[in-house]
Image 1 (cartoon, rainbow over the protein chains, first blue to last red):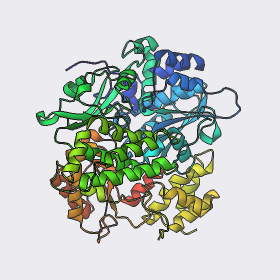
Image 2: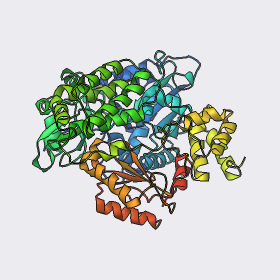
Image 3: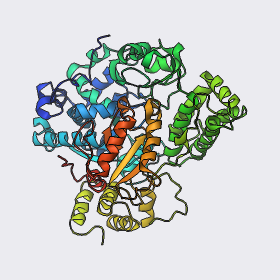
Image 4: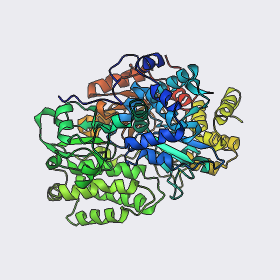
Length: 446
Length: 187
């Protein structure tokens, strides 16, 4: 098995590192100490030089994002940690917070110092009860030991971090929807510009960074930009956590340099396809990234190489389907997910995902027609790039890529008048979801 | 006020004090109201609106957006089964059907004994442990039909087994208190 350098997961095997004493025993808060000895601009330059790109899916250069924060506007600056992990197949932030919560707090502290923020927020996914418990405990410890509060780590810089929990909404992982939610509103995206760097939380300059991104920052400050760029590729520097799930022998989080071939991650680190079956389909970065096939397994897992194959690196969530799995069912489940989680703001996304579920449902359960294939493509075309945020574009990925690579599966569903892989309908597909997305028009609230 | 009175009112004020703008306290206040009444009632929404200077309609618009605010009576134990793809292909699909069979008709509202509410949920961000089930947002992973039955038996006796990480879940009202940010003091 390849022995890759570890950065954000380096301490995962170490007992007690989730407490402040354990963390300090293993180089904890050293990146912060070094940062506090530099000027804020020098910290930003160091992160720019490292080439670090956002690990939440979009891959935007982190140092540039910080550099967009205007100075001397007279308004407070805010840092928001996006801990609303929800992209199907993604579970890296969950484990990062469970295992090494101080690493995240240190990253938030360095970021806050760099952009001049004295009050930061962690927007924690509501369903993450255990990560929240770990981070809350770490926050208390950090306050007790002077790494948060007045004059952190012996400096003159003050920082408070407030934990804020979401309440069940995938869309709140989109940065402007996250800010709306943090302001006590429905989690719907905002029109940009203005970007959050100019008008974010409470219309103040705001940086929103993902948990994995922030957890990487202390290491860049401690080890230096040059060390970080010695890993990965020229344009996708450093390491990345790849979440391998589905039909593999050892589902799990595997950290590897950017540009590691997908084959190494699936076959070597995750132990290959379960029970010796053949690989059928995989996603490089969650449900919002187009499917790839066994022919793409030698593709390096970095932003550029995956894009060249017509997909996206996204969150690095590699969902693996084997020869027995039905691609149409997978697409149906993901479109149900999008239909349920669409915030409803933009018509193409709200209505389009609903119609896609209708069509896919009959495809899977009987009643599908050959003319449904172009209908799905057409609905997809009418969602793509026609909404406020990237949610709708993500919803089209499973559709367009399955029509491209697995068209024959749809045709077999039409010929068999239902799913050829199962002898019974997908029961769950017909089940209404409980909670916020049920029909609320005219509903009597008890 | 009937919901936010006494201690709960003081807690609400403390939550509001955490934010530069009081409206940011809305989600935690709704959790707090849910903890007091077992689910989020119209009364709870109205009082949260009054505390923050909003209209009931504004609060209802927010409450109906988020799945973790339950606007109907909910069991002491909320059982959430992930049927998204990574879990579904590892047995989550069958697990949800089995949960429906065990718990019977109406479990998606609340079981007759008031113990359990069943729901089908989206990816819970723990796919390495698939199929994943949460009980009041505590994870039970790599479940089989047998271990699911054991889990449900425990919940019926108000004695949940230990989750894969962290302390045992507390009931749904207590969990809502934690979600409001009132501290997680579970043993």
